[in-house]
Image (cartoon, rainbow, N blue to C red; front, side, top):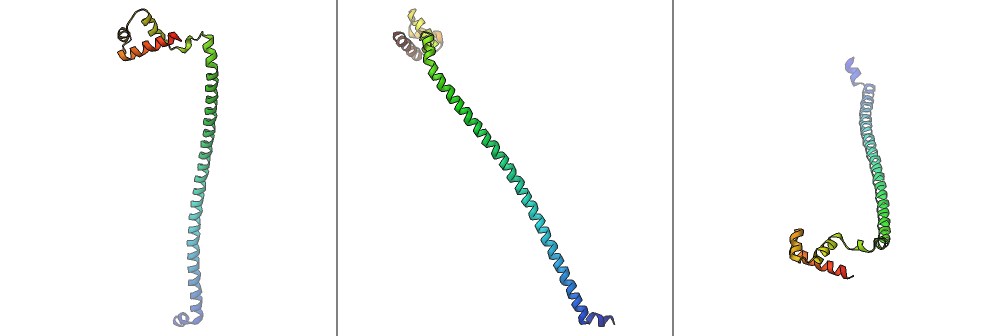
Length: 141
């Protein structure tokens, strides 16, 4: 009787449908796992994109701040250049000659040679000669 049941066409058809259903269920579960993995990768990519957009916004803000600072610095430099001649006139023009030149000029006017100035200031004789010449040129103008 069991042998007849196992070989009957109705049983074989039912067994076939059960196997087809199990295979379909396995395929569906496999597909579902792949979809979940793809969704997880998509969410991770979205998080990374969001973080990169935030970083890009920070860099843009910093670039804007740097540009504003550079513009302010440029305006301040320009204002200083315009004010510099006026400040020199207020100081009597002496601010245009550096302190070192005036000091070398005073030493030279007191009768010291370029070699003596070099020894006193601990600089090379060639540099001292140039400073003495520049100081004399500054005195003439």
